[in-house]
Image (cartoon, rainbow, N blue to C red; front, side, top):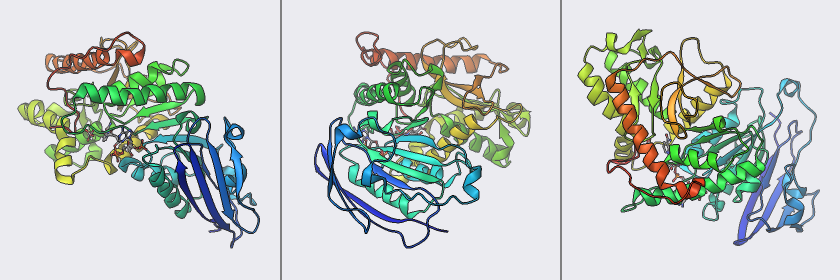
Length: 438
Ligand SMILES: NC(=O)C1=CN([C@@H]2O[C@H](COP(=O)(O)OP(=O)(O)OC[C@H]3O[C@@H](n4cnc5c(N)ncnc54)[C@H](OP(=O)(O)O)[C@@H]3O)[C@@H](O)[C@H]2O)C=CC1
Ligand SMILES: O=C([O-])CC(=O)C(=O)O
């Protein structure tokens, strides 16, 4: 394969400056376009750069004003190899922009390489990765970008890094919001909601101002349902339907446990809904789920196990894993983000559905409006989804759903100051926990 050999390094000189040096040599004939483009660190940064190359002189100071709002490659940062198109590239679709926050974190470290490889959006879909970090993580983010370069993914056309969401989210068609502060020892959940809520309020505003108007947003950073609500409320120009909170990992965990109990491979489990919050009140729905096309309750006769052990196992799986690993699920979370995206861009298999935390307005289940609640969805593969109508409820399921609903309403009251709905007041139920907390 023909490649562009490129090495780049940035050093932050002070909080609002970034100095970049790159070396580039083209030993091979290049046939794809590749750029590594650091984004400004503030709204008005100054960037000085030097590029060691036969063609480009250094250093070249670049004024931030010149960079503002530009989405194309800029000057030496582009390091663009505009080469003869291969036959293969003729069948490629238009480049899509994918923004990822918390891009130097553990989940992203798995996810980015899946996206860049073509596993997520397909083998004909070139991608531009726009990576959001912070002053804390900018060095690590450069490391991520370097590893992406060294992976020589043909479909990866651009990588840009930055700490300003208004810049990084420019023209994003997908925003995968992963970065969030983890809950530390002794930290109240209300504090976590406030700290992370502020991050997501800011990012909502930035998406509203900069992203593609039909951007699809998947919020992963916890508490993801309420973070997604905050983000959505701060982005009034983006359709509310486009905001998702990731509950696909919970769905996958539930499928695995049902398969294990039934003694079948997990691909035999379908129609798995997670209702509610990505927390320990989430409801893995064994009433509507199917194993080999049959209702779960017909296959697994131990209904006490379903109501008690199974449900709790799924709710607390994240916590058990943290105890084993010493950190939260990263690889399986990345896989579930891939699943969540693919479920939106490929038609849902006939009769099946998938779970996602989406806006409740207009839902057919009687769930209170104006929250982000995990529900069963189907997609035609166009990035959009419809809620599934043909589901049944019993008293057990309704009671559990109500509990998760009450929890999300309490979380919503807690962040009213971040959604533009008054003063935040926290009266969270005592047992409100993330899956990772036990
Ligand atoms: N919905 C789901 O199913 C799951 C959700 N999660 C959640 O995903 C999130 C990311 O997990 P993971 O990648 O493993 O975490 P990491 O700790 O590896 O990375 C998190 C990133 O969040 C960013 N961050 C933003 N604000 C802060 C802050 N105030 N303090 C510290 N870091 C901050 C950091 O990046 P930077 O400095 O660049 O901003 C950091 O790189 C967490 O909130 C986790 O709870 C995890 C598993 C499953
Ligand atoms: O609580 C966490 O950070 C981990 C988490 O969400 C999960 O494993 O489902």
